[in-house]
Every structure is written in C-alpha cells, then in structure tokens.
Image 1 (tube, rainbow, N blue to C red):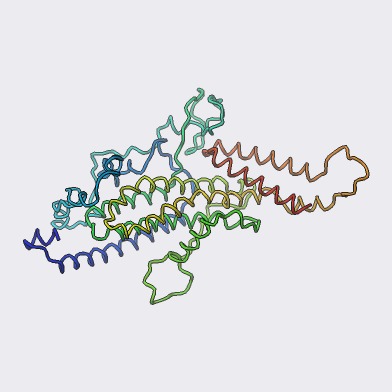
Image 2: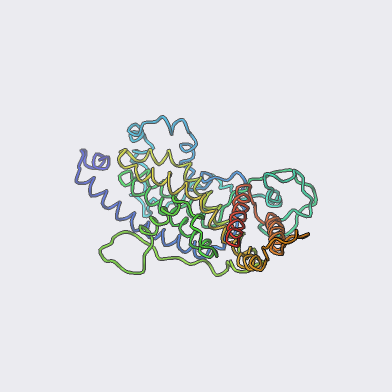
Length: 415
C-alpha cells in the first residue's frame, strides 16, 4: 500500500498483491539457493570449533548490527504492540527500499556497515586457556594448557580464568549469518514475513536432522529409550516435510533436500579417536547453541507476525523442535558408549560363570574386572578429551548416564 501511495498517490490493492507475489517468487528462489548452500556446509564440515569469544552471540555478527538495539531491548520486545510497530519508520520508511530500486543491487547484495567491526574471534589469551569444566580446580598446570585452534602450548603461567566457550562451527556461523539477512529482508518485505520465518526454521530443522543422521545412526544397541517421544516425532516430521525420499513427485511443490552424508574427513570408527566423540560433541552442542540463538529471537519473530492465527507454527517450533535439541545428547553419545563398552563380551563372560553356590568365592568374577577396566579407561579418555574441547557438566552427565544405562541393560540381559 505504501508503494502505491508513494508512486500513484492512492492505495491500489492490485499493486499490493502483485508486489507480494513478486517478492514471494524472488524470495523462494533465494531461499532455495541458501538451502543448497547449507547442504554444502553440512556435508563438508569437519565439526571442529571456530575460535570465537566466550561472549559471542548472534547479534555481534554484521548481519545483525542494524537489529541489535531492537533485539537487546527486552522491554520493547514485550510491551510494544505489533500494529504500532508497523507504523514506525523501522518498518515503513520507504526510503530504505527506494535506494535499492535506484541502484543495480538488491538489498540482499548490499554491503553492510563496515564502520562497525565484527569482533567475534577469540584473542590469543583466550585461545590458550584450557577448557575447564564446572567441577575442575581453579588453577591448572601450564603443561595442560592447550590451544585448541593450533594445538600447541603458548604459556607457562597458571590460568585462573574460566571460559564457557560457545560451541560454534563454520556451519553454525553460516546459518546465523543467513538468518541475519532474512531478518533484514523481513523488515523491508513485511508482506512475506511469515514465509521468511518459516524458511529460517527450515535451517534449524535441517541442522538438527543432520546431526542425528551423522552422529547417532551407528550405535550398537536397539533400545528405543535413547530417543524421547518429542525428539522422535520431531525427526519424523522433519523427514516428511524437508527430506526427499528418493522419488520425484511432480505435484509436490514443497522445497526439499536430498539425504546428506557426513564428510569423509570425520572418522567415527577408530577407538584411538574415541569413536569421533570430539566431533559428536561439537555437532550436538553447536546445535544446542544455535537453538539458544533462535530462542533469543523469539519475541522479535513474534512481532513480525501480525495475526495470532499465524503463530501456530512458531509455537510448535519453539516448544517441540528447539526444545528437543538437547535430547539428541543421549542417542549421539550412546553411539560412542555402545562402541566403547563391548556388551557382547560382558554377556559372554557372564555366561561362563558357575552360578551354583557351593563356596563363597574370595574374588569377584572376570566380567567385573573387565567392566572396571573399561570404566577407568573411559574416564581417562574423557579427561584427555577435555584438553582439546570444552566438556561441560551437562555433556559429562549425558555420557555417564549412557554408561550407566548400557551397563545396567547388559547386566540384566546377562543375568
């Protein structure tokens, strides 16, 4: 309507509808390209940490700079009426759109404000700090300080700083940058804001689906309890709506992607590599971090949707999809635990035990020795891993919970 008033002096609904259709067509083509780009990132990611600052958030990226003040103003996010927002210059200043009409660039190709530095990379001091879990000692010896980015020692002084390093990969940053561009788009193309938000959701859904596909499809047990009902339903819905099943349906206009493959540089099968636990942790925890960034955008996204009836998909996304991300810890980490602890060997040893009670044995059975040895070896391997990547208390709890689950299941089956 504003465009028709600007150029024609009156409101023309036919022009409004035409502009909406053209915007939708343009955006659908742009989104298809970005989805293909994300597929490339996912298939080529080595699932290694990017050295970002401990305070890193999405709003520090260039793509979010123009939105930073609005996103950080929590009071405005909660109290501002959606209708009044649409009447503000941030949404309706047609001069923002005119400059793109008068140039050869689309607003998606325009350069961001280079006067604002993107200060997201960790400094040398931050890189050299060993990753300390919440239950570690405050002081650590200089011999244990390892630079996770370059894998070499830098300093001989004791470090007392605790850093909660965000789990971020190249793919995580790519998703956040594209989301920033999409939010820029939704400011100018308010008529397709719902479509833009739904497309942002697809990025997270594909990320979640691939983390499960890449890192949890190789565990060696058949227990259904490793998947919560919410996670199972979420994965089923994503696969139905977003993943092609191999057949081509000409009547289906829904944008879908092929089933992706894990990069060949990631080895999940070698025991001396802890069965790829480092990559699995980075994958799962980066997904959870990404979900937190989406969570920070929730109020802002709701402001973009004018009708309450259109918010159902957003409610489902936050209450089901984002919340189920943490549930991926159990199946993904169980894949490592099930490989590390050979349950078939334990059951074989248990079957050899003579359970007839004639004398009281002075020593325990051999399967107990094997279990004790495996648990100690697992603890040492996990401790060594903390020198390379941050292992939080939540991750440790999930790992040891899986160990307890597997051992209990094995003992019950053996008895």
